[in-house]
Length: 455
Ligand code: FAD
Ligand code: NA7
Image (cartoon, rainbow, N blue to C red; front, side, top):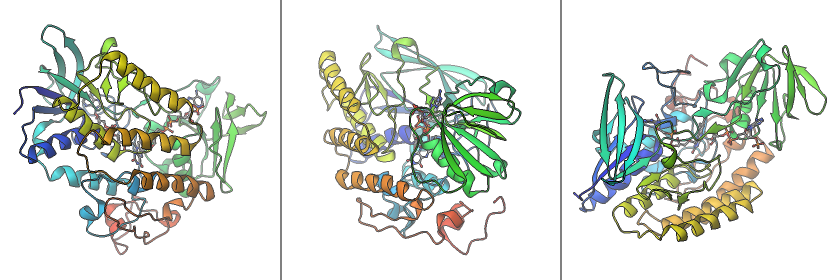
């Protein structure tokens, strides 16, 4: 064992990628540091560990999960596949390109269950506060064991923050909304379309959450969906029953007024207005401060905090790539901590970071964003032995996905793609997505399975 200690906060896909990176090193017979991971929920998987709860959990902590029922992958699974553990290896058969939540959770767990990672994770444990002790060159982290209601502290030479950033709502105010008589919620608290059947729904925002919650509620029987945008509409061809309007100016009772002069009555409002990067356990000098973007400032290679080289952030970018991006980041972080990747001085790092930020500023379209994140991963992957894969082909799939959505937002999930990891051609799902109301793993893998009663 090397002579240092690593603390990982969060056992979502990012934290699990970090554990997996160390495990793969250990399997090669190489020494690894002492690693400990702390997770505030009672299980791993982060967002993919669905909870019915909203508000606070059973120990009074803010609920992390923003995941909802009937969520099917919002991009082709071939774009997020782990390079060292394919979908075919996990399921033993070809499956469709857009599996539902439970299926993706099963896949994430499949890889990590093959290791002894669980032994390194302390669940029901929340990081409360961290500081860096210059004299010891260590982080002191204060945790609460939620089950025992006990506080304790640990010291680490490196701290890895994998706490996600789609959990703390960005909740804007609109004049008169305080008097709106129906449900007003943020997407973070949305748990499925059921409660909005036969309702006239107003969604605010024009990104993934608005698009997906809107289409789900349409599919499950809302009366109408209106999506109100601030900067630009989503702009796909919507079916009758979904419309886009410019921003709300104010509410009067249950009536919303829009900046194009129109107004309409609604039963419910869902703010799909994004999330805040929030690190309540980190002091000012360690805290990443950024909006949701592809290259947050102050992170060298998107990973190493530039103000303190021993602090690592994983998964803080806006995401086209997900699981395999977290992997490439974790492999980079591992090799950096193991001393294999030398760190340039701070000024050189600043120049590198600024180069990426300037390039992101030049991007305009979804395709540009895909190219940007593809280049980012290409840059990272060359530093490590993470299995290389054809990133240009993945970028092409992402662009087809963007195109498929524009052509038909209701059936893009019926398209199939080919894995760049093992060449498996996805199998079309047995039922078109619009007709498939049951998102259970059982039904997904077996058309004959009884349809779940909650639908
Ligand atoms: P998270 O999954 O958020 O995990 C962070 C973990 O840190 C959590 O387990 C949390 O409990 C823990 N934690 C937080 N604070 C503390 C603390 N103080 N102490 C201890 N533990 C803590 N991606 C896709 O690829 N496809 C999709 O279809 C898709 N759909 C999505 C739908 C929704 C509604 C949302 C919100 C996200 C979606 N994503 C999707 C993106 C998703 O964020 C990533 O797939 C992935 O979950 C990010 O992993 P993460 O580990 O970085 O963060
Ligand atoms: P995003 O992608 O960060 O998008 C946030 C959206 O909210 C975006 O369209 C913003 O408009 C809009 N927004 C933010 N503030 C406001 C206000 N004040 N008024 C109106 N509109 C506003 O978040 P999502 O939740 O869609 O997606 C995050 C993840 O969750 C994603 O990975 C999915 O997989 C699920 P803007 O364009 O900035 O004007």
